[in-house]
Length: 419
Ligand code: EPU
Image 1 (cartoon, helix red, strand yellow):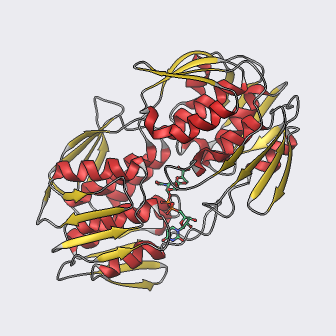
Image 2 (tube, helix red, strand yellow):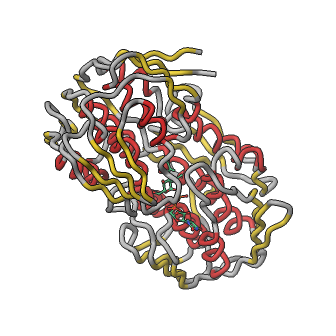
């Protein structure tokens, strides 16, 4: 099993381009099921979750492949033969559940394995189902599979989400595009990945207003056509690289991402003393002292992204005072804490909050990745730790970061992968 070995201490300098957004890509791939013809997605990150989604689409009978001549393009012909997403694939990636809305909307039924809990929390799908039911689908749990049916088609309706859910909003939004009449999604997620999906659906022929606000209005249409779309840059990868630069007191330029997508991360990095300048070239970051202590509270967009919480905590372990990090989105997203403690971090957990008392140095240690962002956090910490850190179980990081060690090496990190 692959491990990543990092010799800490190198200052990161230079420029780096982020890959396309993993989470935007996954929703866009599911949306290809709604369209007639071949969808072409460009700037797709070559990460394991995208491979998993390709396999799911194939299992449904669609033709879904990487383009033979461009390593970051996928082609999807969204024709479905058997509307069932199998357990073995869905258990590898919860985002698989995003195919349910398109399946029931276009084919009248879908069966997707119930995704179950995952490392970062229970993560139910009740809001996805509540939305689909409001549109007239009947749903039931059948031997571990969620089945949704609407043989006569879906009807527009008002859906008020009980909490802000990104994939829930995306799933019901996709379904609503082919429903009869008007759908109103309230308390909708406002994440850039929701906006990007809505923009793509609009290009496909959907009628959508209000994406990016908490109220999205959809007027159903009869059919959607396939499009070509270039995926926008990954805001979480960008934030991760900025945290990596900051912890090494480096100076980097991060390119290929819309700075507006990571304003809350930039605000917190600036509060922690990182000098940030946004130009047409990208985001320039420079750090030269220990991070200042700050408070971080995760929240749905435009709040501080839960997907950046672990990497930010890694940075704050070396702070010049005590920081407080509160996780409000997922109930169990502190699995990186014991690993950071093994590297000498001083962190006390108190329910949903972590009190991070800054230490002067971190020590290298063998550590284990437990989920995608936790593994990114360990890489960030390792870059500044004294000695050689070995991060094992890096298949977690390969789920969502494309060639992360190559990008960090390009910035001067001493990092290698061992098989
Ligand atoms: N929730 C429910 N019921 C639902 C749906 C969600 O209770 O039906 C709860 C969740 O358990 C959680 C909260 O609502 O406590 C928010 O979850 P959300 O549905 O927004 O998460 P998601 O859509 O499943 C996406 C990203 C995650 C990211 C979250 C929050 C994708 C593929 N995944 O998940 O990304 O953390 O939004 O921003 O888009 C990652 O990339 O590492 C990752 C986990």
